[in-house]
Image (cartoon, rainbow, N blue to C red; front, side):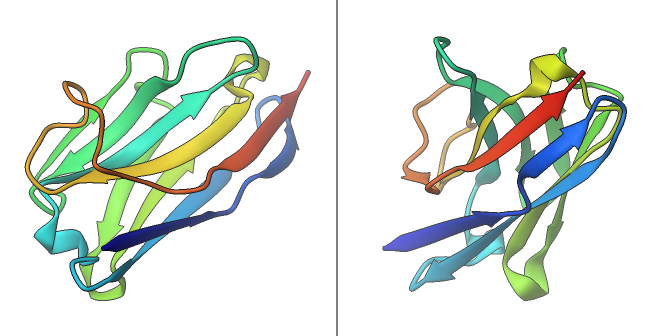
Length: 125
């Protein structure tokens, strides 16, 4: 069993930055034991969408087009933690952000096997 716990959300103004953290724990809750770890988000009235992921403990990284150049995903394997640095935030980035992980699949192509509880990010204009 793997537990993912997010933190770092909040209310900011457009143009500000936030860093989200996702701590993994549990018997298999080691970042290096997961094929992929990353982030999704869900805005009110919209479907949950892929934001970013890191594969093979940070060897590869993928981003949604809407966040490329503004968001950066990184891992600290010693701390079993994945981060999402969000810069130049826009009101349209407002959503609940979910940490996700999967032991054997790319997060872009499957429903991840593990989810966190979500953290709210609100960007005011």
